[in-house]
Image 1: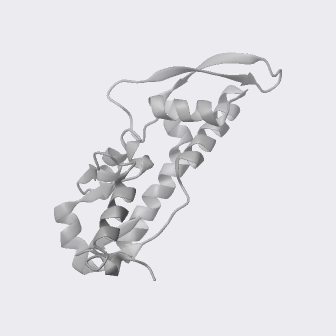
Image 2: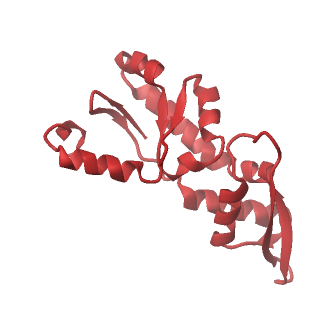
Image 3: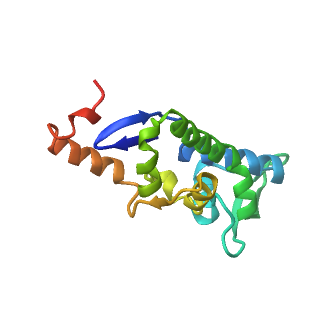
Length: 173
């Protein structure tokens, strides 16, 4: 999480919430509510297929497979987007809280920049359906999702490295 203005970092914080934590949350939810154990790959597939931070226009569901906790017997089951959203409530809450904290710690002089330019989402979390909409409603600010959020950080680091003198103030000593 970072607030950047005039090529300088006004505030930065790293929160340990990413795809793996979201997958773990889905695994726990399925175990508690369906009494079925699933693996990391199945949780990731469910998240990518129907995961969302806010309700989609039409309800989604997917068929998944795991094994019954009591018997160990493999079983198919159906999971809905509402269930996945419930499972992701805590990781999404951590993200929302870190955004709020970032704005609390950001100098007031940058408020106009943020109001004018909005918030940009990058990284894998930006791919979660509806996260931009949820952030926009929560912050009451425009939220934009980078067109290729998975590579944004790497591309930005490359640009900064190529013009190190111009971007020196964004590097941490």
